[in-house]
Image 1 (tube, rainbow, N blue to C red):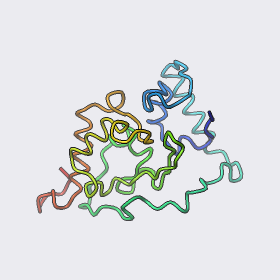
Image 2 (spheres, rainbow, N blue to C red):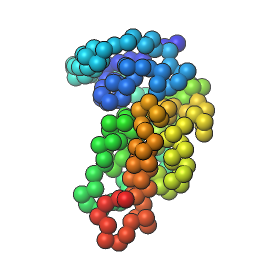
Image 3 (tube, one colour):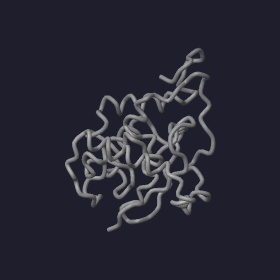
Image 4 (tube, helix red, strand yellow):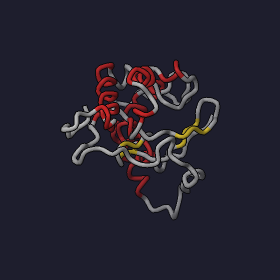
Length: 192
């Protein structure tokens, strides 16, 4: 068992992720996390997040050090952003439902993240920019709905139904698949 270093936790994971995790650590990683569930009130959760946010902004002379693999990590499969029409923004749903706590999408979120699997192996988290090249619509729905069923031990948390509803999974997948230029009508300014 280990306790992670928390100084930059708001910067690394984001407030939405921390709200969900502090409310119930097991909900994102069933049977994997060892953190105690403290039954914080909503106000206490916000206080903890505010404290962690403050800690992350204190000048600690380089502590914590940048992740040791941070400079050697190459984004999985894609090294550039998807080409999308001007004005297309990442829907708020991606931040609210914690996708951007680990993934990057159209220049938003967290690039080059390495997370430990349940076996301790470090796994590179892929950019979502061109996920339509790697997965079909059905594969994405299945993966987001139950990643442990597809790849036991993956660091991808189980988000459905505690964090993301089946309807929201469809919205997420629709946006990601709509980034494919071949899927858009010629005059369409936005992904489907």
